[in-house]
Length: 626
Image 1 (cartoon, one colour):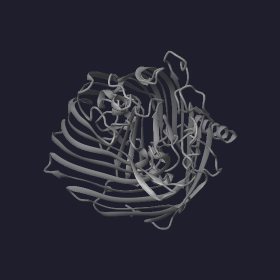
Image 2: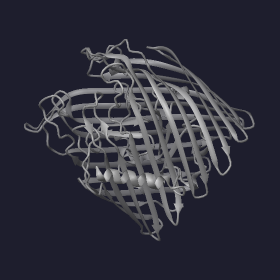
Image 3: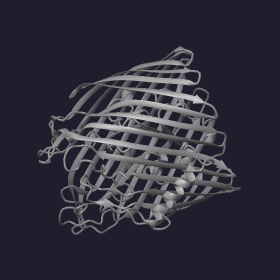
Image 4: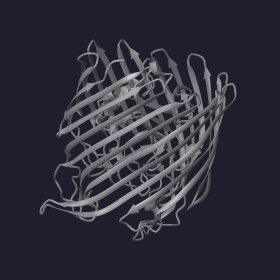
């Protein structure tokens, strides 16, 4: 607890220093960073009227993170819960909302399991990622269901700027027998480009669960004090080109196969073979400077086969299969209707389908969404508005909207205000899980959010502050008879302070988040904290180059959280410190070393599930200089 308090106090002190306030993901030299997720059109991140973050490839490599979960830890508005180390089920809570209230996309294609409602963050290989855009706040008025807490879009690796053939390579080892490698090749020509990337990772892991097989509240209900390993093999291909002067084509594919060991039983299994697949294509038509039309198609598969391996007999038996497929298609037109005035309109279609060893009453459903959006600039003022209507095969029509305003004033200050509504349709597990665990009469969950923000951008420094409130109604929860019903309500208030400063050769990023996630439902849990969310988190990243050397540190602190809705199981807060160093052997080769959780802090983000202690790693990277 003392270490956690020290890290949180240090983070607050650094971030509140007037010289140190800054943006936690977009550095001062990157103020013209383009984002597309916030508005479905390309805009400067600095001009967005809703909070956004961008994490690019340079930041990913400098952090020396070994997984997407590690990279997201402590980012503004994000709480993580993990079931026992690398490759284990990881839940992302964005701005205190539920883990299935986050829309996740890969290269513009919606992903996620139609049964659980969550994306498999733990199985998306970081070596395949070029950049990540995080939008905090509801975007259902642009994307439909799921985007209550926000949107996270992951872009896979693409060819470097500048013509010619480029390659990259990395090889790493670390604690718990971690081995990883990646390699890629890409080319950019006058009319087209392509990138192909392969990655592999394997670790013996840690003992994921300290639970027992006896009694309620025993964690994983299994006695398996062994290492729970994980391995992941992936490949991605992405490319595009121009047909004449007005038509552009682009295609992409990502396939990640993983094997995961966990502590379980003969009923739920203790091993899983999973596959994440994302395929997509885009055709863009720009007949003139004021008109652009994009047609997209995509498919995302989330497949899992679970088995039970009996260590005593050496036999492996089948437990279950959960395979879901999401097909999508969209047409969007963007029209410049005046100076700094853009009108967008489009249609989205989606079909979810379930193939499982569990007998679901309904196995597929369609959804069609129509949307219109407006963006306008009027000198120092900016305005954006969007409306969307979704027609779901199971739930009928649902309309959402959002409105945003921005004002720039002296000394680089910018004020923003936004309001939006969101919704989330129930998952197939919610509706149709057999044995009385599902309820086909459930209705979509709904939300309303208000956000106020202020930021200041200077040369070599910047900072942003956002305060928000989200009210969620018709939340799906259990009644006194343990039946799923739309009775729960939640009120979430919070604030986020992020910043960057480059001072005397040091680069400092700071991100601090506070949420007050309250259960507003009538009954015994009224006014309790929503489970598995820490009210306070902070992250500070410090880096500096000394000639061919670069050193860095990341401090992360998390306050206490409760593991259950009744707030009876309290998980204490914690703090960790990571150190890193890298040496540029020459312009193309770099050697990196890291030490994670250097004080060997023991902590849990889910009761009974262990987290890695002190770990070390060494990585050799090759990337040709521009």
